[in-house]
Length: 417
Image 1 (tube, rainbow, N blue to C red):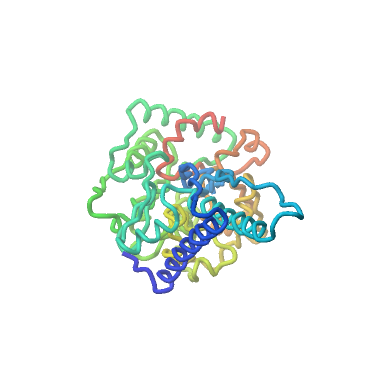
Image 2 (cartoon, rainbow, N blue to C red; image 1 turned 120 degrees about the vertical axis):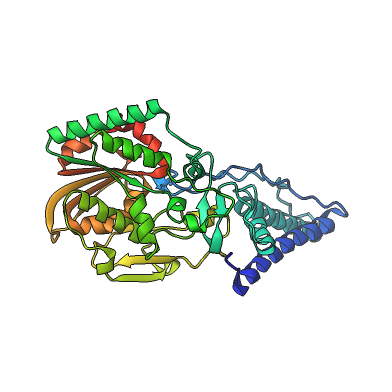
């Protein structure tokens, strides 16, 4: 378990002290102004937290598009009833005390609205619970070994169901996805376009060693079975799970406190994809990797969505960003602002066009993909429009799905045709 540093503990104590100070000030002001009555405003109704990844998205983020998720926000719900302005004849003492009462009420209102409203547990509650018990109070975030965080929301495609094998496709669903995907592939091949389905594993299926012991890891997930079925149907499909597990023994391919793979994971995904097309691409063993604290990077690829969901950003604050030198420099903020982006690299070895349609996992592939091809077009599935295919006229089309969203392939035909 990740141990909170002295600075983190001091910060938690500071927050608690601030809360007590606000309430103490409010109590004394109420006593002075009204005699003996002390009134505490009711806390606003609790609001559920949005899921981290899909738009969510990054706002993915949910979106993104925000694909990476922001907790649901709401208007201030604690109202403060104001007295009418005092006239010149009002006693100065009464006016002064009313001003104090007004100020302390506003402070209390600000505290509830900005700290306690977004989750069933406030940030302070989460911090105290973690520091005292070593547990995380969250219905969406699972604390694994050595401080690793995993996504466990049952309402966002149930990633734990993928992990333990309890979530499965029916035979009819499997058959329907295969037939729809085959029709898409045939239609694109008639236009001279190479089509490939790219399946990216959930974080916990790659780093199962960091999952709690009481969670049983299934040998095959529904996505593994789907990939095998698609391959039998003659569909070009790349399931990254096996190679990602192998490479994870040497490289950190996913963020510790985020749901997504990092730039190294995206690089491995691109390498596997290009090899399936018969295109050589250097392995990570041949590249130089630079690592830096995530929050020291002005242009970072993630924002530790799981740490934010658990309200423990100040505890889980030592994430690293890994960059493969020589790849194409990507401005991550552009990806969040735009649903459809074009990148051009005149110095690329291959002059072909690539269209990447996917979810938030598409982002980490861009530095390596743009290094290899002259033109790369990237769009989140939520923003994709059929006419884009004809406007771009790509040489390659990638349909990317992270494992927990593999069920979205049931709509692949309506997406591309």
